[in-house]
Image (cartoon, rainbow, N blue to C red; front, top):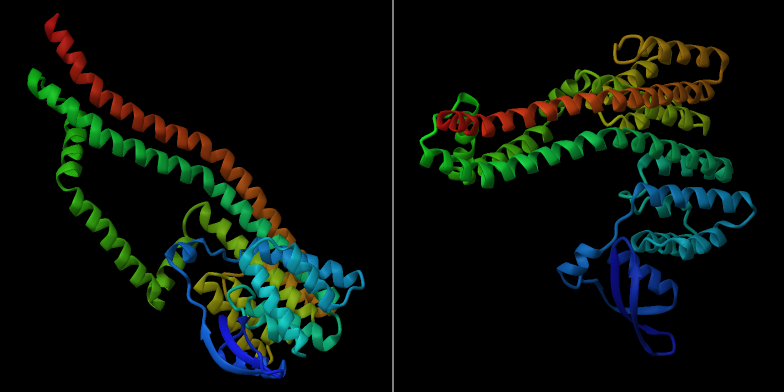
Amino acid sequence: MKLLYKAVSKEGKTVSGEIEAKDQEEAAIFLRRREFLPIKIAPKEAGGILKYLSRSKTTSTDLVFFTGQLASMITAGLTLMQSLTILRDQIHNERMSEIVSGVISDVEEGRQLSDALAKYPSTFSSIYISLIRASESSGLLDKVLLRLADNLEKEEKLRGTIKSALMYPTIVIIGMILVLSVMMIFVIPQLSVLYENLGVELPLPTLIVVGMSNFFINFWPVVLGAVFLGFFLYTRWHATPSGKLVMDDLVLKIPIFGPLLKESILAEFSRTFGLLVGTGTLVVEALNQSSDVAGNILYKNAIINVSRRVEKGISVGDAMSAYSLFPAILIQTVKIGEQTGKLDESMTKISGYFEGEVNQKVKTLTTAMEPFIMVVLGLGVAFLIISIIVPIYNLTSAIQ
């Protein structure tokens, strides 16, 4: 957190400024080491709601850039302090620059890089910290950073692939809702008044559309309140263990999207597990930490249970075979990796296989989704046209 301080230097001068620290006590220790006598230390105020809203946050892209650049500079022979200082000047994100400045201050005081990064859990995950800590103890910081940067880039690419597949249908659905809302609120009421004045007998499709329009216009506060209430209740329920379990199980059973989600989870789990094992992390600990990347409570529980069985002496492959969530190809790959002593390499290879499957499914899904959406749009437009045109056609026929 950012703190404002007022202190007295050893020459007796009063100085003030801003400091990044975990709490006031840590800030006071830092100032005393710099031979300052703290007088007042207080949290920095936000300075208004606009400043709060405009405050930048770190993103996965910032983390990928930070890790990749740090790995490249350390591999090139620069010291950690030199690399961090150069990085601070290269980063454009204000919040990420502040974090790097805080890390530099901690490293200058003699702290380990992993301990300095651990002060920012919202940016650096527990797996990230564990890998850095393992590399510090083994003296392989440059190699671990390179593998970690590669891992983060693949995660970012995988997420981008899935997001791009969902972007098109999302935009179409939002567009349909907006058009339908405009029709129901502005167009249909005008037409219904016209039909009523002319005494036209309305067919069933038109009656349905007019009834829906009248309902939305007359009861829109109820509809809006029901939507917000439903969303609130769903959010509360989904936050409970039972609610999350039910929804995560349901999501995996959705046709097309379920298998896609399973393979993306398996790709991230395999890559992370292999990376942890490759840096010397114990298999049980690597499994427990890898469970956090699953993002699905069913897979997380299964991975944790696998780690418990491994702790009792069962091999990873045999422990996984007890759960249907893990496909046969993953289990066989794990068993081969255990037999050859190259579990990390086996997991890296299988993660590449799952990534390829995800990419292929996304391409197929995108190709198949376009005609499906066009058909749905066509049916919706046809229904609206029939509802509007048929009464007019009946009127003109009656006049003739």
